[in-house]
Length: 122
Image 1 (cartoon, helix red, strand yellow):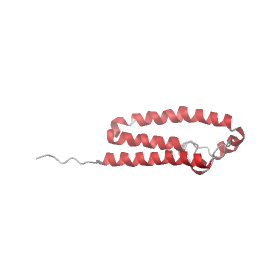
Image 2: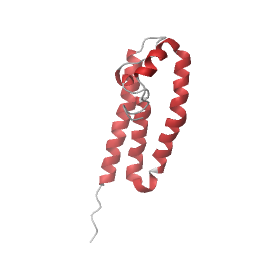
Image 3: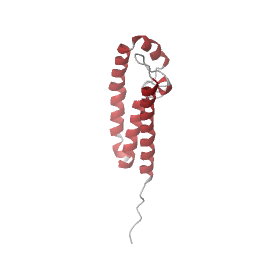
Image 4: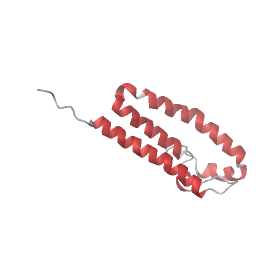
């Protein structure tokens, strides 16, 4: 008699939930910015009024979603390394670019939205 192997394990469902949530955050923030941005101005409304990089936050959540069904304990280092790269390199580089491209807007935006990824944390 064959053992029953579930089609979707708990890790699979958790991974799918994280992937969908992260992808929705990426697509939602990018679509919002694309539709509502005024040319020549820094977009600072919606999710970008809470954190500077909601799209990067969504990507990190999606990376966690990929790791969950593949053995999260064994593969956590992959999304952790990607998140660290975004936090240490990508986000600061983008902040410098935005400060140079939109200096008048950035002066007001940066102090008002000090968090890059999660409000009140990072």
